[in-house]
Length: 317
Image (cartoon, rainbow, N blue to C red; front, side, top):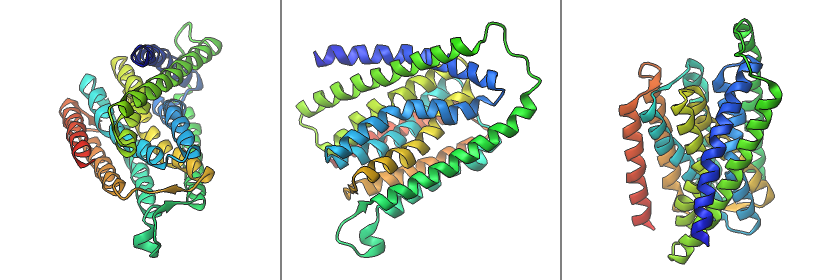
């Protein structure tokens, strides 16, 4: 039964992403704001909702390894395989603002995560924890980021105010399409994660390994399917905005909310994963400076990087 539900989950994810990208890109046109801002906010928040759900449930059930591993693993998956596949399908255009602010902001969020989880090194404590106060700091950073995105959106409307809206693009229709698409993504993601995790535990995998691989891949499927769908539709700004925004939401919103609910103990093994995540963010920033796009060659390098990382994690655990 678990295998059948897994397939149903994948079908819902794919169809949901198709509707979601169409609806979100049309809403951007109706609002007269750049597609990348929709990618950084509505699409990023929507595709991060499985991470939010899984990590909060894991925190409430005391499975901190799954909660933390899910976020770090998802971000690495996004930076490598999601960007890689999307860029290989259709080179991703990178706006200057994304290079100057959003991708570096993702790196700063990763640095903040490394700092708050290093209690033994920095404060001489006996254990590493992401505490409730750390979680509140993350949520404060998130509110600053959202304020910045909203401010940029208002400024962008002026330059796009004269652009014509395509015929047949209406508010009601696209809001319904976007909501239905998001529902398919969330419900499909939940089916994939729960059933893939059940299968993985049957195979005898550890909680940390499940969090970094099966759960991380499962909860990142919405990002993967949405970004690939956006790339196929040549909505490259939504594809990249979704990935960058999701990584910011994963650290600041998901871990912020989870640690406010209950402090998260940190497994020493994940420090190397956080460092890998930071290095990959810098690599994405460097790639983004090449003609302001992530091309097929860079996409292939990133996708292969995930395969190498996956082998490393499996051998380490």
